[in-house]
Image (cartoon, rainbow, N blue to C red; front, side, top):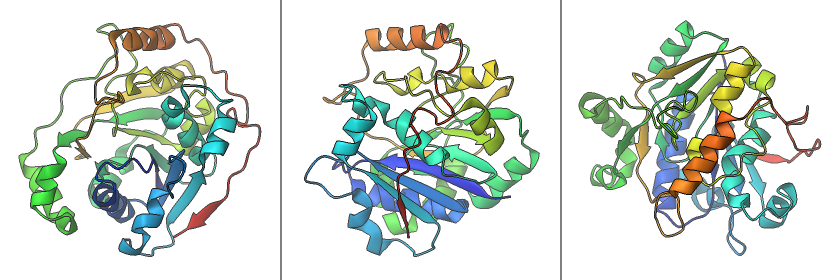
Length: 284
């Protein structure tokens, strides 16, 4: 059983070295393959991975894809909301290049579950169900106190002390599909499910994570839907979604709810909206 994690990142100056090193080390300990896509890092900045590469183990299992600003603009047709497309477009690019049995889509602020615990869950998982694994938040400053190098020991502490997150992050109280869909949650499914629903919907361009309709796509294509709360997954807290550190506006959530509620079928073609664009990756 081969597993893969799909992550994306920008060179955004938010404690990037430490948090990304911790995330990637934990992912490489848990998954057989890790894709990292550098999406649209600002002009004049190198991809984040190049800054920290010498601090990571050379496993041959980390695949790095770089999409510079000019390519990002081309892929999004200069859409002013291009930055909000990261979850959709970058994840689909990685999904189309991944042949693992079980695939997780997530972000770079995560300490992954222990490999044995993760595989134990997968051994009982239904290959026809789309899972959303709920994160548990902790402050990145707490990890600093324990030294970033000792993240595995700190994960053991979190396993014993963190409370399980028992609430869904729904767009509205009537939203049946987003379940817990927050930044850093694991969107987890067998590759056959991902291929059947053609990944994330390319047209999803709103500026908050709750607007993805990936769960509804799964339901419309006949797959089961399940939220998972008991698999330890840790998210390093960070700034809000807005440029000023604020949360998305009420109108943004309303637009997102409309998008999910009235979605009827995928608009992604057999290329998932990319016109057979192939992007090379380097293996580390």
